[in-house]
Amino acid sequence: MDRRDFIEKSALAASGALLSATGVEALANDKNGKTMKILMINGSPHQKGNTAVALDEIAKQLKVNGIDSEIVWIGNKAVRGCIACGGCSRNPGKCVFDDDICNRISEKFAEADALIVGSPVYYGQPNGAVLSVIQRAFYSNGASISGKPAAAVAVCRRGGATASFETLNMPFQMMNMPVVGSQYWNILYGAAPGQASLDTDGLQTMRALANNMAWLLKATGGKPAPGRADEPWRGMNFIR
Image (tube, rainbow, N blue to C red; front, side, top):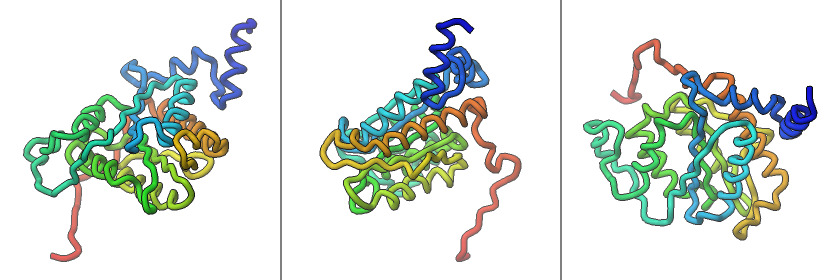
């Protein structure tokens, strides 16, 4: 091993990625040879707030692991809620409401190998806008994201983070998406914009999440979980 190889391997080992730089690059490609990429949704109305701090930390650690990422901000304009119109069943893959960010995000599902959704905490719940986006995008275009690994991140001033974290995870479990964990719940604390960068424990949790997500993608080659692909759905209502 020459000096350059030693430096590269030592740096990766320190970050928790115990592979050479060449090994990371090779493993970070899916079965079709495409560099794997994670779609991250910033569900805060503040583009550069504490939710951005969390997702930026994850993105940096994913890069260490040879995984690309894209952060999409939902913005601060009005977002519609699902009205159960059934229009997406007549036009699969797209919500009938095309005047907000939902379909723009949904279009990115097919190219993403995994999904991470971050949200601030409002009254012990995620931001209502990001919930509306997820509900509509999953209902109208769930086939494009089903089976792919997912994770949620909750950011709060003081309380309500665990309830928000659980709420964000629930849609993933209905979509056969392996939920990726960390060394703690994926929570970051901070009040003023940027203050979350002082939460050293939370930032380490974000990096551990990124490492775990990268490991799972490499281990599966980016292949989605099979779910119930080998048997027909047997739905049942409790009241007939």
